[in-house]
Length: 268
Image (tube, rainbow, N blue to C red; front, side, top):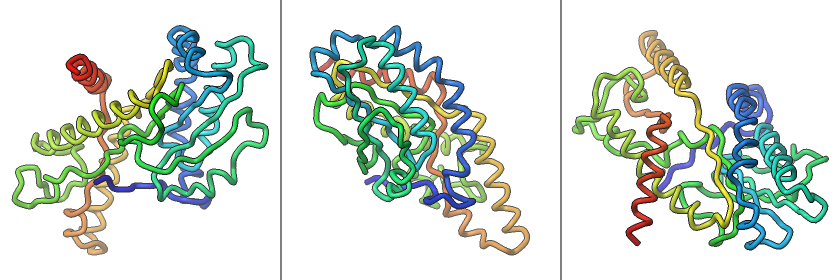
């Protein structure tokens, strides 16, 4: 069973809308790579065989904007350039995030001049969300590090992976903690990739991972919580029971996850 971890809703000072500058930087720096991948690797013939004149695009982990709109407009524009004859093409963009995501805020801020039809798809991207062979282009930017749930071992005080005073694997010397996060990430990626493999037809998926430097932010957050404990403003047991459900994968982690799916598929 997955757990929902939506970003802060609305457009207030603590909302994701006002505090997603790092994600925007990653998105901006990856634009040319996305365009290049579409230009060099997207097979037009396969897509045209499976579609009339409508291309279906999905953004997994869209949150509430504005980054998702910037990403989708860039993808649509890159696809138009790839297909050349843009007059006959229409685009459907499906914005996906947890059911508790603030979709009202998302759709209130939809760009007026967008060149696509917009849809909301609530649900975890670790499972299947679309009919088989229905999506031509899948996109996921700075969201893949979110786990479906915290590793269960971290919640058991008798487990070798239980650790006191820390909220993440960053900063711990206990290898069991890291192993628990890696195992959960691998399970989640297997579910996610299997779902996308069934949904995507003749197209491709682009995954942009968060830089591992993001781990420093988690470490800083944990240190801040322990400072509050030292000052008597927070009960230490609350910190001990809190774990951040994120794992920041390396390119090696991603390659391993994809290769595992390929091997499993070859055995079927």
